[in-house]
Every structure is written in C-alpha cells, then in structure tokens.
Image 1 (cartoon, rainbow, N blue to C red):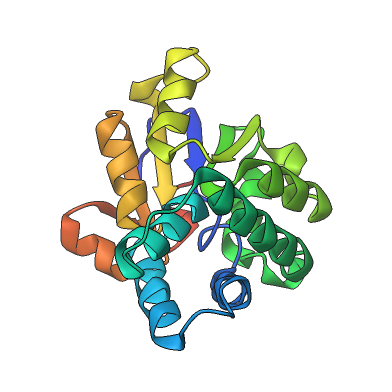
Image 2 (image 1 turned 135 degrees about the vertical axis):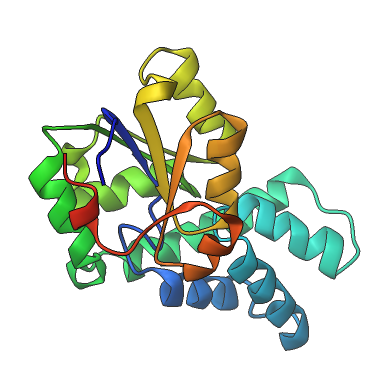
Length: 209
C-alpha cells in the first residue's frame, strides 16, 4: 500500500492493547450490586460501541437501561472505580498487541504518532508510561472529551494536517470520528468494519512507508 501519511492517530483498546476482557471485568465489578440482566445489557452496549468512553457507558446504564436520572458526580464516582480496576488489570506487557507494537517501534520516527482513545485520559497516560510505550507518541489523549473532539483538537491546533493523517481503529465510533473530521480511516482487528467500505489492515506490512 503506497501511503501519503505523515501522521497516525491510534485508538488504544483493541488496537494497541488486548484489553477487552479487562474492560468487561471492570464493568462487572463496578456494577456488581445491580441486577445481572442489566449488567449484561450494558456489556452488549459496550461491545457494540468500543470507541465510546466509560462516562457515556455508565450514563447509558442508568438512563437507558435502569430508566433513572443520574447526577454527573455519580458517573464520575463509577468511572473512578472503573479506572482503579483498570490500572491494576492492564499493567501487563503481555496484553500489548505484538503486530501493532512492532510497527510502532519501527516507525515512530517516520510518522508523528498520537493516541486518541475513549479510555480516560489520565488513566491512559498512566498505563502507557507503566507499559513503557508513552515515548513513542507525540500526544496521548482520552475521555471524558469525546473522540470526535480529541481529533478536532489536533486539527485545530495545527498539530496534524488532515490530508496527511489517518486514524487506525477497531470500532464504528473510530470510523465516525475520522469521517466527521475528514480524516482517512483504516480499520484493524475488526473484520466487520470492512462491510462499511473502509480500508482495512490485515498486516502492517501493507502500511510501511
């Protein structure tokens, strides 16, 4: 694949790290005092919207599944509990995705690389430092700001150039964040994305500059 890019924006979960089992465990633990059928509905929403933040998912749990009003502070408390769990479960280099990590290590001097993730920004920076990968990226940003806005911020501040940038992600939410900001998108680790007519990476050998 002949590429035109100087900037790569990376999703984190499912692209750089195999975190799905940990995320599921985190939601189950954080919501353990609620009925199992309600937790199961939240986990389905989570699996279908991997790029959305935990703040959105906890709000969805209370407002859409439990049909009750919820204060912002309550959402923040559940998100904090979830983050504490993640900082324990995800500090494991064995969870890093070998193909992605190898590409990043070999090419971080060829491209300006940034992480834009639905994961909490502070937690994300903590994890990247603990996993000793933070130095590969020019910036690492996450929720509570939506991914659409994280990408827009990089464009508006002239940190990246739209026509020279692509976003690599594994969810429809990643695709939408790229599309809204007029960036190219490449799907990875989720073959269903190919059904949307997007470029799809099966091996990063296709991406080499």
